[in-house]
Length: 368
Image 1 (cartoon, helix red, strand yellow):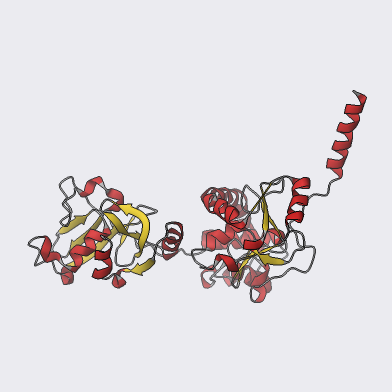
Image 2: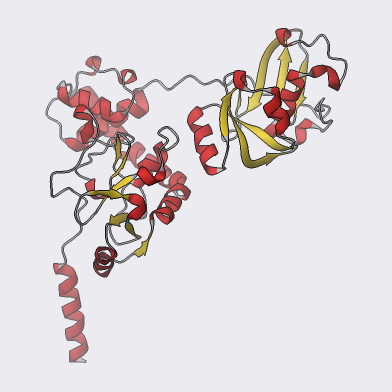
């Protein structure tokens, strides 16, 4: 019994004496972004020195975590083989594809619930697992997990920002900052905004956490969001039939599209593909000679992700994906180009086109 108690005591002492893992850089960090903005993550604005051992490099951008890398992939296309990650042991950039990753250790995740740390050698990864737990895996597995948990991780981050960072940022902006000297709409990324606030001394006597709160409040809350292309909802009745295939459109609201004419006529379709067939050659589907393209008032389509009705002439369409509609292969519409890029990556799409770049030949090929 005494021997067993002694072993337990020794184990507890070793745990208490174990050094906690820090994500902070203990060497001069490699920061690849230009100018003063290089200090912060290009997506969330977090300090890269503080989260250096979980940071990634893609092109001329640097991220505090794989979560932010994945969140920006649609806007910053890159070859997976070119992505670099910081080796948690040597603190040097290494090719992510060649790294050994430890996923799910006792180290807290950066911008996610599950931690993911990279090592150049399997020995280093195994030594880390002995101290902190977790499972050794590869970059493809880690990337897949990050993509699948992106929505959940983003929701978690959003909740924390709403509860803590936004209220703090609002108070600091009013009490310690010259708010009239900063316009968040001038900047392309939050790290550019942060560097401006700091370098121009817009806020007096604030620390890094307070700077982050002010920047988040300005970027997420005060900045003007891009204007939506949303128009009126598509009006469907149980009598509406697609003039191309004859199906009742109300049964497929998530795919519905519509051409609205200046004289009040509306034609509904069970997908963009059939709508475009009609748009290019209406005469083979009935007596529609008067419904010329010149008489079109607006074209309405349904955003695949949000299910909002959007302006079809301003939408982005993914062609050749593995997602099919009521009539098979489809042109999948999105309000935002970034959403179209994300969808194309996830569903093996071949191309993204704007409305004016859709051709009759490309539409007809979808039936083959």
